[in-house]
Image (cartoon, rainbow, N blue to C red; front, side, top):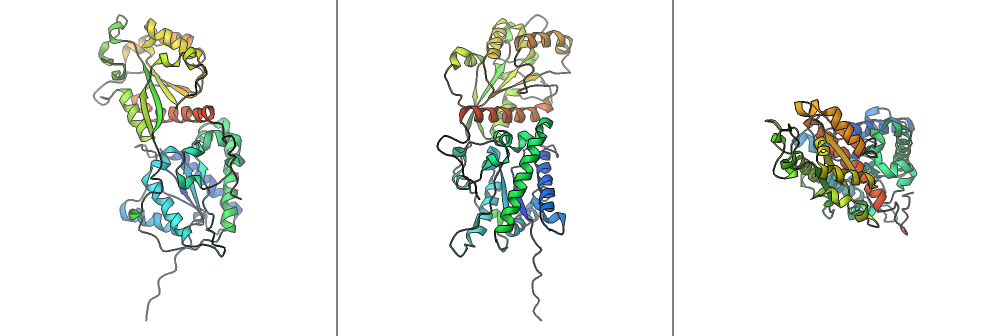
Length: 399
């Protein structure tokens, strides 16, 4: 008797394709996981799926090697809708590019009676992106992001997830996206196929230019002008050598750690100076990219730095985020903290209470704070630099 292969189990309703955050913290992707769960809950309520596990698939990273590749390939071969979560990190990810390739190959193998391919890709914005910055394959996918709400269009799901005040906008966008997923899933016929050999696939994003400019500025007093009693141990020959958390476990300066994190997030870093942000130099100029300024609290003791900080505070620079590190193990800083904070608050009168300014207490917090600063600055840069949608190029719905 010839044994027949066991029937393939039904696939997930949608496949959420996203870029993993490079972080040792097991909860690094918790905001994506929350979005996935909320979408699954909505899809389950909007359909007659008998099992909650059938609502969606998200790569949790729990499997590795052959098992991981096989599970991805099976989900891509059987899902109804492919939901890519757009961000710069997404389009530099080889695995995300392979997932897109696998799904598009499946679509292309099943043209309809009229020769048209099924439209089963529903993109979502994790962070805002200019349409012209997308790789070619993504530009061909039309979707009216503005239907998910103006806050979503301007901040993406990441921005809506992080702030409690954005919860109504998050709920609106999540429900609208789930509705679109179900609409496409019910109206599009896409047959399952045999899983592909995932590792052999090439990324669909080979033409993506990840090198967006980022201006990184470190504001630190010159080592030769440190106030009496300030230990030069934390300072180097250049401002970029400053390490407020210097020790055996943190040999790198914050600048070089920031450089590494910026590269991992798809940015080309340029060293900046506060003098570049003087209002008279910025008049009539469009920004070329987002910026992050890292300020040593002791900078307020240096007249040169103090004057530059005051001018920086007067400029309207929403696309520039600020990080202020405080080392709780540095006795000199903790003993002068009240005085330094008072001087910073008086000098950075506008910036001090701004959402784009953040203080950190430990080196480990920088790993979270810097990507957050990048996202805030990047979102504001996109809003400032290019209207959405660009003039004469109104996006069309995929309806």
